[in-house]
Amino acid sequence: MRWINKIPERPAAILLAALPFLAIFLAYAIASDIRLEANPQDKLLPAPSTIVETAQRLFTEPDRRSKEILLWNDTLASLGRLAAGVGIAATLSLAIGLAVGLLPYARSTLSSVIAVLSMVPPLALLPILFIVFGLGETSKIVLIVIGITPFMTRDLAQRVLEIPHEQIVKAQTLGASSAVIAMRVALPQVLPRLISNVRLSLGSAWLFLIAAEAVASNVGLGYRIFLVRRYLAMDVILTYVMWITVLAFLIDWLLKNLSRRAFPWMEAGL
Image (cartoon, rainbow, N blue to C red; front, side):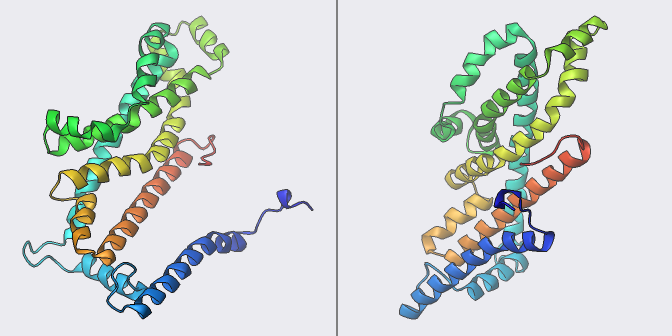
């Protein structure tokens, strides 16, 4: 049998999935041990045991001044900004994508400007956003919206354009208006792609969020990482980085399962 036809059993698949993570952990542990053996005061690669102790402290011990657990405060602040930015971006992308995909006048008007906006580096706009919207929550949310909306919109519009024309013709034959076609024909076929787009855009959304928090904020995961870097507190930084990774994985997993349950006919392979 050719390798292309060999599918691992579930236990083997789990083991194979775990191997890269185990390799990364072993490589880090070995590198950390080498550096600490040469210099016990080295802060660049703290020992895994040190990271575990730091994580336990960050998750359970309140701050001495505020009497609050800072990691949870940072998490809630960042997740709130992320949810607002991604939610607004998804809503705009869905509305504009349907319009561009279904309406020739909207396609002629908006396609070019969406294509141009997708080429603008969002982080280059960050100083402008701070000047226009101030240093509060609005500028951070707007950065996420600007960063991911154009790409999501273009993909959703293309998905609408790929809907078989026969479906549109049949709906019109039955007397459906443009609004009915959008809601009853196009929308059900676009929603699974919207969830996939959100999943694919989460990495960029996290990047824009952390960048904005690093520049101007007093709470948030990105703010805390850039705050402690001046003290070379790598154990804290690595704990926050791993926590962000866990959060991103959980959000992606939830969206994947939402897609599978809501649209069982659509294989969520991403």
